[in-house]
Length: 588
Image 1: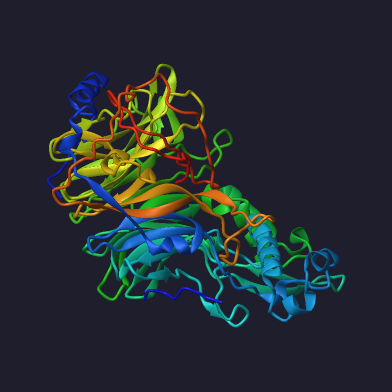
Image 2: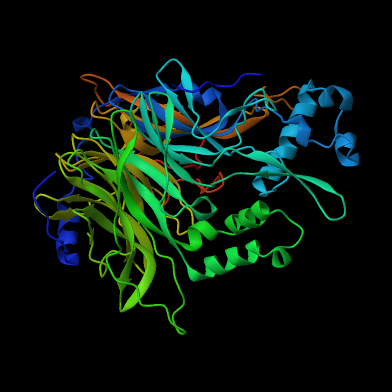
């Protein structure tokens, strides 16, 4: 059974708010309509990580071209036989060879059944089932894939790593430095009830903790409030080894009372104390009942934490009283540049109310400073900041009576806020990343349909030329790929993106699936691709006489992968260039 190994700015800025009139003028000056020949041509390179799992999502790319990906439902997972009840009548009825399966040698059909059984328990938050994480992270260097292990460990029960702890890596600085967050190691805890029934519980010490994987070693980034394991997430790191994220700093009174009930033997009932605590966690205790604050962890060259700084809310919450219950508020730093300026999002005060809605924010000099005028765009967030002090993010506004999310660029040095023209006025768009060449990538809706989910295509926006481009227009004609989202771009302008393809399905062991008549079972899948610039490339002319934009192009189709959703369609400005695409669907 294969298991992947582990691999190893600026002067002071005043708060700035702009009127809707200025923002609309920026729409007019932005260019969705520049000639296609002005953009670079890209070629598609599939990363080998796509062979690891059902769906593989783009995450981050460094300047060396190392790609960080998130794999969903990876193949060839190890089974802990001690947690399978091979005397259970239902399990016996569904296995073709019980003895072989119990001995650890299941045939392909039985292996798939057992994996499905374990996944069902994991997805249902069972505390007595083996756990399989939905997501794992890998670094691809163009030839090999090395797992970011997070807090997973080697155990005898699985004869290797457990793959039970979810690991979501968010950013790769270089091949030796990755930041993210993950669950703690799941371990078995045996308990005998008052009725002499023995139960094996499967628990973890924390459900989310930030980490840095530095030279192959995982460095935990704990919160200051660690009750029930606490909560922390890490999102990015700069060259000075400043890591940004969010961490729990305080429990609400309601959570303190709930923990007191667990600590009371009579109130708790016939369950272990750790199980009572874990049930609180599964009920959302650490996310709903703990204050979380934007955090910067300063590391030394060996990866040790030198200092931890948290940032306040931009308002002072009302004191707890009989009429005002204790409430947990949140903010988070999502990115940081080499000047140490962090950006992200924060709960806010608006219209004389404390609101649990996010507002784009900068975290600097111990202060939390909101960036966008809430009267025009709210909620909002700041996704990234480059070394030129350019912030990108999104803000929500009303267009023809409907809420639409629009991406923006914000220059800290001159306080210029621009919401560029995207696919069309009613399109929602999200900026994901900006490089130091001031090129932004993300995705936006390209369908006029008023459905709740509309197809999306990836885009590139060049601030230097104010050109907004559908990335699919930069590929060769008749490309088999539909680029539905762009998550990252490095300083060589290499883009890491999500593509939708239609390919033969694979089972839990990674084997190709066939119908009973021997024909192939085809399925839509999300894969990760690199888009590499072609030197002196020329845009292919894919136009035809029919390339006049219709009122609506194509039929709407959607595809959901849990919390991850992207939707695709060919982009349009004044006219669109036709490509022959057989698939249009969704993903993250």
